[in-house]
Image 1 (spheres, helix red, strand yellow):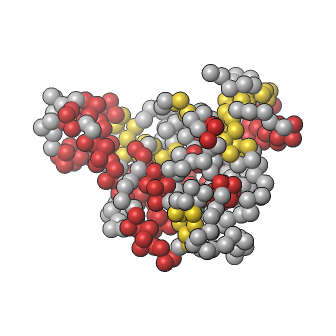
Image 2 (image 1 turned 90 degrees about the horizontal axis):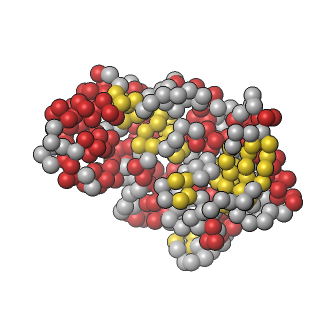
Image 3 (image 1 turned 30 degrees about the vertical axis):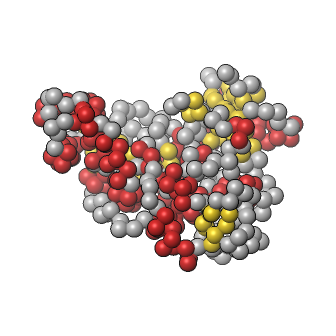
Length: 375
């Protein structure tokens, strides 16, 4: 399908304002209009979904896809088309099988750096031997982290148990196997290697991250080098962007930061309407840029999370505008500021839609209430 080219100029000196960046990012994040993509294709396009908890990937896709049902993600997870695995920023993501085997090697240097934080608890531990032993254990039988720690302690009784577990997670691409991650099911975290679960080897670490740079821009651009480094938890990506520069367009944001983009990527008019969206906690839209002002107004910086706790967030006119939660009998919407009557109606309608998608059997049992952000 041929995309309609934006009227935005491709002059390298062109400045993209905050609203232009917002609309471009929303379009690529499938949040400006819902996409007919399958759940698996959307997970691939978005380079994974934050999945620290079980439910967020489902709510993330409900906000982005036309015709989505929880089963559309739960079924491919059971069928091993998507998996839960630690990748970017040392956090659990839901990835396609392909990306689990390719993105994890790409971010391995970051996992190696993470491991140095635990070196005092690993005195005398041969990390290569630990990785080989842990692999044998989880491939012989999927293990909980507690079971894995207990087995590793037999080999290194003087080591810190927590550090041994972190070492196994950092050294190996461990996936959480179902029923963990399935909608409406419960299950403790049980681990095996991605290669064992998916029945094929991980691809070797790429010599260059160029392909991932292009995919990142397709999902999050226009973006700076620092933006992508924030998303990936990696450093030293400047060389890749410089190699790709002849294939890319360049812009500046309002602070003068250089931004890169794909020539044929959509950059909608800044005046394009952006409907309300209910996002889960830790949604990648809010975490994948060094400069988050394209979606987080400066006055609301830090309002979407507190410490290590993230909240479910509300977008209004494309930007962070409040929080939401599901109480026992109500969807409670807590705007940060005053919403106009038209905006309240749109937000309520979107909330009703979300409830019907995610909780079709009980959607009509929920009231929709507007409140004030607590604290």
